[in-house]
Structure formats: structure tokens, C-alpha cells
Amino acid sequence: MVSAVSLRAVDISFNVTGKAPFRAVANADLDVAKGEFVAIVGPTGSGKSTLLNAAAGLLKPSAGVVEIHGKPLSGLNREAGYLFQADALMPWKTSRDNVAIALEIAGTPRREALARADEWLVRVGLRGFGDRYPHMLSGGQRKRVAMAQVLIRDPAILLMDEPFGPLDAQTRLIMGDLLLDLWQQDRKAVMFVTHDLEEAISLSDRVVILSTGPDARIMGDFPIGLERPRDVSEIKLTPEFQSLHRDIWHILKEQVLKAYGHSTGMKA
Ligand SMILES: Nc1ncnc2c1ncn2[C@@H]1O[C@H](COP(=O)(O)OP(=O)(O)OP(=O)(O)O)[C@@H](O)[C@H]1O
Image 1 (cartoon, rainbow, N blue to C red):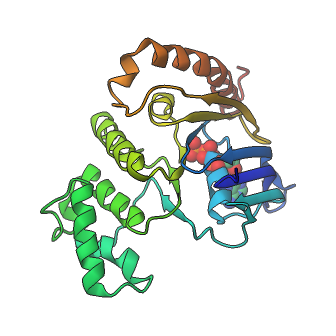
Image 2 (cartoon, protein in one colour):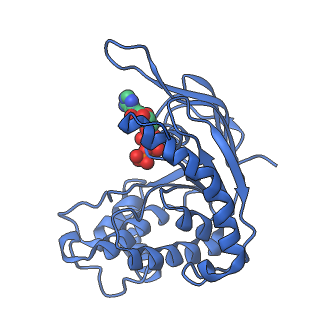
């Protein structure tokens, strides 16, 4: 079957003035199937965002190919919705308008866009919050608006870069449950970047590990067979979760220590 996202032998290098190009990611092969939820974890600076940006079409690989549903990607990946750590809400627009605008710029008439925005605000648990401006919302509520803004366009692929990073631990769990609820309804292909191994295991079908950069490689690919639907706080208490966590952490820890050694000049 054709993958939703496919990276083949992808290298990504950055030009740094006065120095040799910096190869952040080397020879990455990664397939994300339609409907599959894949988490990417790795030490800081290992190239997680870089890989995601290549799948988004924001970065062009220096070698290798990115394919989206079997077709080589050139320019922006228009089949993907992108959710960053910092949300992209417009402070001068209400929640309702912030969500509706995603449809309006694609040509949907305003009245219809507003009606669908209202439906989406309900789906993300924000009934009655449509008239609030972003500064009148909590961090978790803003994140819900941002999710509605991305999902209302019904992208086939979701690219998420530490989307819950700035939230407190409890709100992260609640947002994880909301994300899984929505994902369960129509199973988009998801690439989810996170530092947090527990979050990665509790949400995904597969956890992919990146090694310490430069020349970061995909050095682990773990299927997560935990049953669905999942409750992200409950699932962590199961022996299956704990055993997966132990196995993956065993590999990841070495890379995290290496990255720490690089940044401090100490050997891991
Ligand atoms: N525009 C750029 N120019 C030069 N180097 C870059 C550029 N963007 C990223 N890098 C380097 O590429 C490497 C990978 O960066 P990336 O942001 O993908 O890592 P990450 O794993 O997402 O990190 P973190 O977990 O800290 O967010 C890092 O060493 C970074 O310094």
C-alpha cells in the first residue's frame, strides 16, 4: 500500500556561513502509513523538527526524496495540517473567526465557514467560547482552538511539532486524550514530534528514535501494540506500557547522554 508520507534516503544539510555544510539528518528512511500515528523522539538537536519540516515541504532534502501518497513532494505539502509548539492564532480575531479563517482562505463562504467553526469549537470542547479572543483563553483552550483551526480543513496528514510542549502536565494529558478521540474518528496519518517518551508511547502506533546529531540517523523503530481506544493517563499504569518504556528508554538514554556530552564537551 502507498504510504501517506515516505522519506527515502533523506539527507538534510544546512549552510552555515564560513563553515562546511552542517548535515543534521543522514540517510533517513521513514514510512508513515495512511491512518498511522507515528511519534518521533530523540535528544535535543537530533533533527526531529528538521524531519518534520522536510515532510511539510518547508525544507528541501539535500539528498533523497520525500513522497506524499506516492508522489514526490515539491513545494509545500498541501495535504498536511501543521501544528507547532507556538500556536498560530491571530490575536485580533475571536476563536470562531480564527477557526473559520482556515476555510475562508480556501474559498468557503463566510457564513458556512462560521457555522462549521462553531461545530469544530464544540468538538474540541469549547462550546460557548467562540466570541473570546486568544488572550481571554487559557493555554490549553488556545491549543484547542489551534487544533480546530487545523482539523477543520480535514488534512489527510497531521504534522505536529511538540504541540503540547508549553502546557502543564495535566493539561498535556487532557489534550492527548482529545487528540486521540479526534484521531480515532477518522484516522489521519500523524507525525508527532516530542521530547517526552511517555507521551510518544501513550499516543502512537510506532515510536521512531533519532540518534544524536549531526548526521542523526533513525536508530530505532518500535511498534506500540497497546490496545485502543486508550486513556493516556491510565495506559501508563499497565505492565505493557512500562515494559515498552523500559525497552525504548534503554536505547534513547544512550543518545540523550551523548547529546549532553556534545553540548558540555563531556563524554557520555
Ligand atoms: N536553519 C538552520 N541552520 C543551521 N543549522 C540548523 C538550522 N536548523 C536546524 N539546524 C541544526 O540542525 C540540528 C537539528 O535541529 P532540529 O531543530 O531539527 O532538532 P530537534 O531534534 O527538533 O531539537 P529540539 O528537540 O531541541 O527541538 C540542530 O543541530 C540544529 O542546530
